[in-house]
Length: 67
Image 1 (cartoon, rainbow, N blue to C red):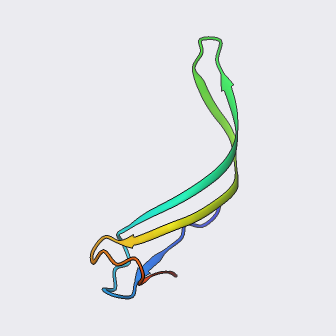
Image 2 (image 1 turned 90 degrees about the vertical axis):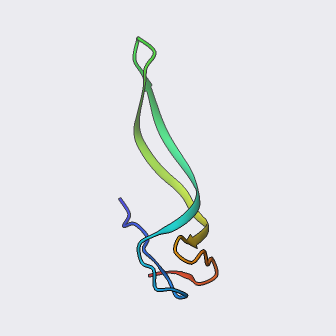
């Protein structure tokens, strides 16, 4: 498992609250029971991209950096 990304807003100093839009492409093994219930197993992350991140305190998007 990869370590979560951390962010900092250079405009206001926020380290804790961000709106992050990300896209993921995953491969999953879907296992259905005989009763029709789904259990997802063996999730493999193929691609992930961060589309945007915005500070929840000052609403800046251009000053948010990954730390």
